[in-house]
Amino acid sequence: MIAVVYYLHDIPKHNRMKKRMEFATHEMVNVLQNISQNRENKRISLEDMKCAVAAAYLSIYPGTTMYATAVLQHMFAHFPHGHIACIIGKEGGKASVLWIIQFHLAGNKGSPPSLSPQTMDIAKVNKSLPYRHEAAITTYKVDANPSEIYSNLTIPKGEIKILIECFSFWKNAYIFSGGSTPSSDREVFGFFLMNPIAYGVYKLGYFNSVFVFTPKPGLFNENAPT
Image 1 (tube, one colour):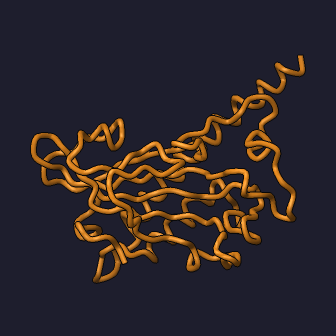
Image 2 (image 1 turned 30 degrees about the vertical axis):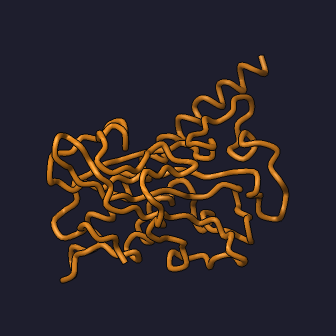
């Protein structure tokens, strides 16, 4: 009977977390599509991206809970992480990634960040392609079949699309605020019986959500935002 109660708790909770991550991803798209529309220079900057990330994840991390409280410490132990990538359609149905921006709020650089978007760690990924992050379900390649980058990606020749992948990140180096160490990802995400599904090469991403969209004119180009 207890196992049934736990099961009835864990399955709906997993589904709710997944839906919240999908909502956060869509919210980020909405912010990026509209944040610069009332200014002369409509090109999206890294500062715009910080604001988009911070706003979108509020549905999962209310208040300031997405930010580190000390080095490697967070209210929930896990934190927002993800990528924003620019992809162009190529000859023969191929696709190439032009640039990748990575965002995360790990607080692992010797001192925790302030509780504001301005101090968020967000920057261009300077790695040779192909590249796959340890917690991601997307793989970044050049002259590849679009499905090799993301299973649902389709893109015509010459068109630019933006891919956003959002997830919660946790590994055993990250602990709760106050210093207590989680025993498992089940404890971190508040599951009783089942283990939350983990994604990526090292199974460190949780509730991963991907959305691909065609940006409004002037927002993005072949050069990464600065």
